[in-house]
Length: 577
Image 1 (cartoon, rainbow, N blue to C red):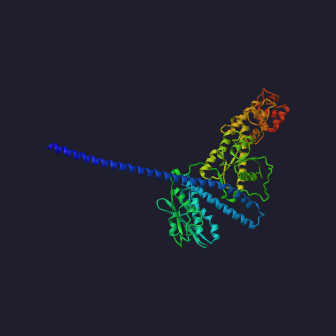
Image 2: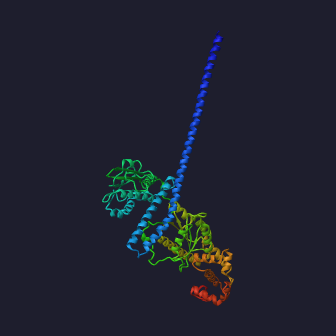
Image 3: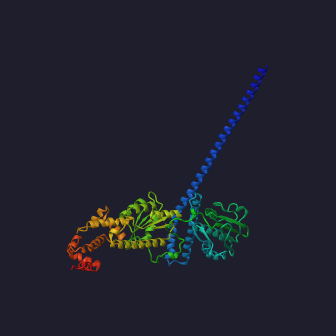
């Protein structure tokens, strides 16, 4: 009986266990289904997030490309307008007013383009902080001064209050200039005539500095408060209307990038106050350690820096009387033509419409200077510069890079590639011409320095760049053929595997002299050495160095050193006793 009860009890337990296992299996199955559902939902969310990211990236890329494309037509508008305003005194006041209106609104369009590009760089984390230590008070004061005239025209009073005359901090002037420019523009836009804007600077808590901009405008409505720092938001109440919706959002993004804070307070009908709080110190990685950027010329430079074109400067299709050859490499035909017309007033000009043909022309013609666009199909401007610097035939040629990209890191790329000047579109033609003249003048000074080195001792010229290596090779070839009376430019060019014209232009560019004059200079320099050898007669020295006759040698020697060969020998060789 006991055995039967025990068996019955075991059966009940087994049955309960079976039921429990079945229940567990059911629960496990449900959990698996739930996990699969959660996994599918997560995958869907990730796919949606990735799609959203891709869509955003595509929009940003479109904005960026579109913004860069706008710079070319802006160049073709602003360039001629600037020239008309600075070089046409016969314009009537009404015409000047109309042109000034065109310039002002084109520059406004350029400002919007730059804001779009900054928006893109902030979104993708490509805008870098390059801070230096300076006086924030003086920096802000300079920006405020730029608003004095437009404020005065509307009767708006600008008050500048600094708690201390000097407040030193580490900051990126390029970034903060955009921040305070946007905040002051916004304040002036919404401050009524006869109103007031107060800019104050003081120390904050925990090693910070505070810059506040308070206006007596209409204030910001409750509806707009939560959105004024959103990209492209345009409020309905007028506080941020009639604008691009980028200024305040850009300022907010830039201040955060600078490890600061941008806050505001506002009373509708009474005005608004925006406060920028900045740390006095910044981490080492945000402090400027880059080499000096290439020269950056924009239309914001003071007009006094540009040499104005005279009223009679009419650019004609024919070449000027100058021997200086400038090569223009630009893929946009209108910009190419515009540059060529402006440069032809002072220089001979050749043009190319892409990087590959531009480089080929550079090696064939050996121009005195090259103006080259950066963004070109096939071979970019940076690649053209790199190839020019690597080729001894063209390594000496100064290069002006034109670009629609004005980021500091892109300027550094240009310098590292070997560009001499980095000019941003749209550019002022007067600045371009002045840059070209300055580079050519610097090149002339470098030529004179090399000539002095060469005249002292050709063997001591170090071959630490392509130009000096070229001079050493050229000198070796000429010295090897000095005894030949018929040593020709063609022989030397053939030895260097270049054409006669390439050799002539290279020597002219590096030394400022012709190839024949260079050969003669080496012969006469060598003659001074041989004349110190009493075992050789003057006639033997003349024939040893390839002169056609002793009389021609004596005439050439005296023309160079203002002393005859015999007099030179008498002065430098002690008489035998």
